[in-house]
Length: 418
Image (cartoon, rainbow, N blue to C red; front, side, top):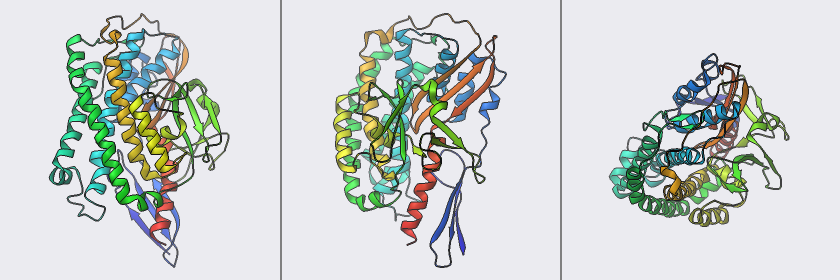
């Protein structure tokens, strides 16, 4: 009996390791994903005025700070019964699109593409973004341009490119000027074109590595995502579970999440293991993020992305259960985010100065949900009559995925060590 330890896990946002236990014949008998970093933000925000919390919790993640900011301020709005102006909602959504564009480009081109473009057997010292720049400089330039566009969009709507501050209870504190809007409009068609080219790239890479894509990390799970009238949505809507075979959909409002999502604890990780309560644990573990979103939605909300989603489903099936298909799904979302950005920029209300209403701190309980680049993000705060947070619960995107990541690693280990 032996043990294989992979530590540290590279190309992830956090700390962790994998241990694979092997029997005497060298076959895996157990796989554990250990996440040992304690963030503690659920306790950090207790005792703080709720209006401060959206600025505090951005520090949970340096990549996904914008979704945390927005889910947080949506939770405060909900706790205090605030209806924000239409223009404020559109500006918040535009900020989120900026994060989606920069993060999806980052994830694919900087984290996933090196293994595919350079090849999984390439020297690890060159299997990175620097290697991409050397082998495919035009691809790298497009990746950098998309990240810059997304980060600049966050800066102009969120006050700064990292850890935004403009989301406030009752709306948003900064409007978008016509000059800023026009500058983004000059670039957005190029970003849409780069997104389409990214999908062409992943389609060619899929052909090259389809055997691996269909065999490694292929598992049946439940799926969770956000839909609005059945359509894919990053910012607003209901939560929807989809069963592993696609036969059952369970849709519910974000405020009802505790009735549908349970959290299991395991001794080898500080991260809780969420599951669909109807199915129970462990049968009800589920995935979130681009793959899940392709599965749970009836359609994309924009035309080019919908065409790309249909191609995705034709290729991988419905529901798609291949973990490596996340790369393709992510690029469908990237295209959808760019299309939605253009829609928002062309909306006359996007430069409105009617972007906030007066709010009164009070006792309440509110839930805020958005789709982060890695999947569904839930913030839930309870405040006292002074508007001070007395209880907080957060389920971040990566937490949803941990149980199924462990299951996928188990499947991949079985495939590799057979």
